[in-house]
Image (cartoon, rainbow, N blue to C red; front, side, top):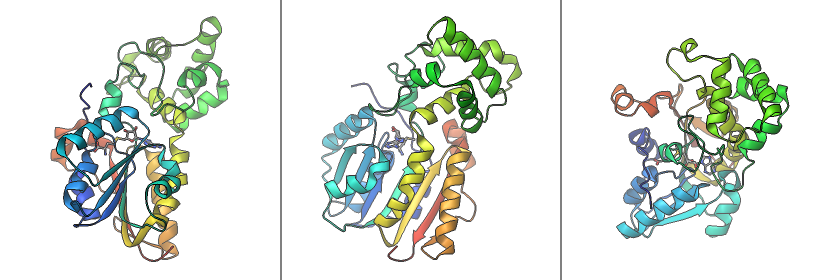
Length: 301
Ligand SMILES: C[S@@+](CC[C@H](N)C(=O)[O-])C[C@H]1O[C@@H](n2cnc3c(N)ncnc32)[C@H](O)[C@@H]1O
């Protein structure tokens, strides 16, 4: 198996806020390289339980191998979409099981970005597939079939791309000539509209790739759907932590926390989102855009 590389982001803060104790029960909704899951499992010990969820088979296989190697018994792994959290818990735990903490670390892992079989990265030439799991809508269909204005909207909303309309127009013109099938096909079209020199720091394809990934996996919809379920699965005083990397995600979490705080169901622990320390950002550039929010459940909502 290829090695799964991902450095966990803000792990110290995740552990500080979730505060795992012996015998505790936690859910890691975005297993990835299992950085959070393994650290939580160590702290809750054999009497505790950690549920680790990921859509990605690679993440599940990597974690399963590591769990076997370390002879850990208290981790349950499930390959599924976290938007199905309630059903996943019902299928794997006794009725009415509640948890001490639930964590989300959104987006994609470094291992997925590096995966040659998928098209998360605009470097190289790969199939245009940005799905986290096996069953999502194909990126290639979005690029080749979405109407001009729909492409413009997702590039603008999810990518915050200033030239959204021009890029969408170039894609529509190009796909009339020839189907767009690889990441290199797409990058070549974007580079015609936005020459590299117009961008100081990031590649011109960065924002469009992010937008297509978010649309392919319906990421904002999954987050909005799961937050109420997550709160429902917490014990009173249980902690919900969300680490996000996109302003749209952070806005959803902020609004959700505020709404439930107004009705006294949640107590917000991070008035403003925490960000990684300078040392973490220097050591792990991927951490730079991370925003960390945490809240405590106050009652039996
Ligand atoms: C940033 S990584 C998590 C890294 C992890 N915290 C660690 O320490 O290694 C995000 C993971 O969430 C998964 N993911 C994203 N959206 C998901 C969803 N809706 N359901 C299940 N897994 C999802 C991705 O496949 C990816 O493996």
